[in-house]
Amino acid sequence: MVLTTGIVFDIEKFSIHDGPGIRTTVFFKGCPLRCWWCHNPEGLAPERELVFWANRCIRCEACLAVCTHGAISRDGDAMITDREKCTLCGDCVAVCYTEAREIAGREVTVAQVMAEIRRDIPFYDETGGGVTFSGGEPLLQPDFLLALLRACKEEGIHTAVDTCGFAPWETLDRVRGYVDLFLYDLKLMDEARHRQFTGVSNKAILSNLQMLSRRGHNIRLRIPLIPGINDDAENMRQIGSFAAALPHLIRVDVLPYHRTAIEKYRRLNMVYALPETRPPSDEGTARAAHILEEFGLQVSIGG
Image (cartoon, rainbow, N blue to C red; front, side):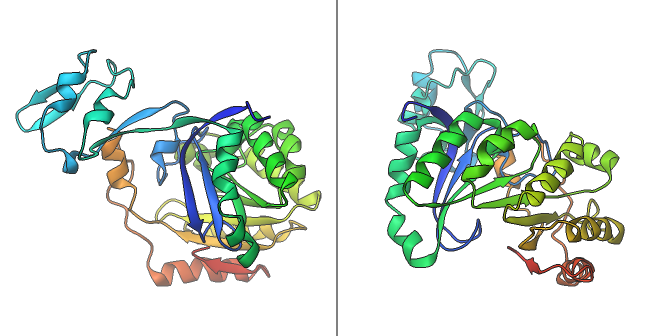
């Protein structure tokens, strides 16, 4: 188990939005969905990626001098990186003292992650917290996830898995016995619209959610509220009806869309699909929450 490895892009300390109490959130790299509003684009691709902070770059050309692959050039006041030539060797990152360059994603062992987690055990004990495995999508690295979950349970640490639910049931079945809480995303009930805005069908997502609930697992449903995409009354009513039929649902979290990820897309040289979309109004968010509450659901805004 100690030798099992995976790829993560962040380990966040003192998180208070990823489950009960103070938590350590481990962000796995790789996701099968391509949601237009994704706020963690650095978690989409399963492999390591170069991140470039143009606003930090002082164009000292230290990166150009050390790059032996011809991936970096200068065009006027801009430093250009040819990502097809870049091998992610990290030489340019090492010499960039303004930290304008970094690599998203690192391979770690279970032992290394557990060493990080153990440092926060006193905070878990005091607040009823624990560890949340997020992403990306943690179910895309099932062996690594399972090994970490087992290690946490051996030390009595509360575990949560933040998931989109798009995985074979066999994968969920392997890990569910070690999960104290599922933070389960639900975005759109209409399959065609789900395909349009996430790239995949929602059939497995809905089926897996039902099976987890029927087996008595603790679930918090999370609904990212995206204006013009899933905030309409009909979608909220369909979600409310579906959620109300789940036998083991703790509550529903309505998570208003925000624009903080736009700059992340620029750093990764990616196109953001919703450049004109604004966060929902307080009234719009309250309206969506009220529709869900009409189905007898316990609803929280902002998680």
